[in-house]
Length: 414
Ligand code: HSE
Image (cartoon, rainbow, N blue to C red; front, side, top):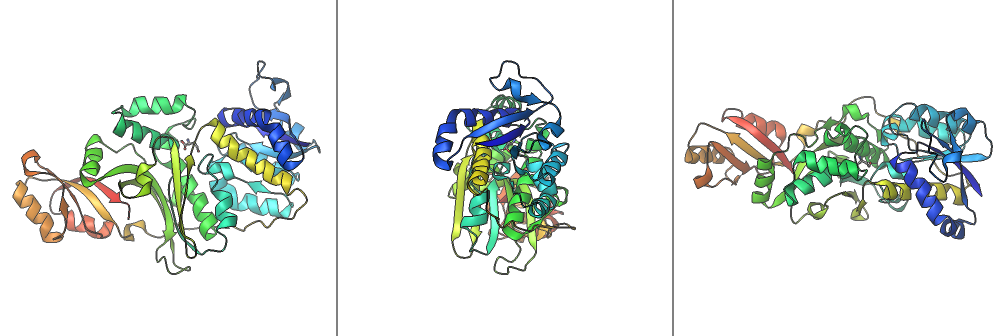
């Protein structure tokens, strides 16, 4: 039997207890031993829960108990989660976590501390909820030089966008549903403003390229500025809008080339499989120089999917308890990633202009002969939507600056 402690007994912590109570026999059949939840650290009491008697309020109870070999941190927030994680690793306990804020901010340091203390710091649940992506990227794709990782990384915003597009729900109603279902962060601003997706792309980029960028250094746009007009324009172009995290080499063929990271709404054409990833589902596309493109897909949020990934990490530790496992070194990046405005993109734009329809079309075509005009003459009311050919943001903004006001400029996923 392995003794573990849960830090945090909210949506994910409760889900981990449920999965262990439900599947402990299955886990024992696969690993040779049962998981015993010895302590649950939380500020609250849970008198009606079957494990309510195991609740403690002092982290030192866990740190000083030599029987506890694994700590599962699911508190959320940077502090005290980081401090408890660090203390647990220094006390020689393995730590597994779903806390993307801690991994994205302190992951390089915590991996180093884990290595120094011959324990493991695992974070499969920090990206993509229940989707196995961290371990496959670290192990199954280890033979590849990776050039790009793109994904729909936030279940809440994907749920909101899907409900707005498919069911015509309001932003507020869709967000309330995502909160009810346990998908949203405690402060849903982290979801809708893109912060959560940003933390996740930082983690994926560190796995792919060995360098952890501070989330604050990454250009991040959420979905709060996406309008019904944007959705209709994307549909007219043959696509949908999704919040995408992207990280890659500026020059995909050069493994030493600078790394870019970016989070923003993108137009995804219907031919791209990411366009079909709806509701709480996430998908992550990884591009390797041997394997080509690999896509991971599944439920990106929710108590049981996330708990599935947390418990998988505990099982990984149980099955390698005596082994000295290789721990990757992540370098902490000091500066910002490469300039994202240099990335090649087509843009879906909406120009507000005083010109007539014919004049506005002629102006656009004088810049890009092959621009695709989306607005029909009979519905033109001083707003012209069009899609540029592949260019860069810098060039597009410069070319359009004299023609009128841009009320939308959405990246079209390459
Ligand atoms: N709030 C997050 C999401 C939870 O919606 O994706 C999973 O990380």
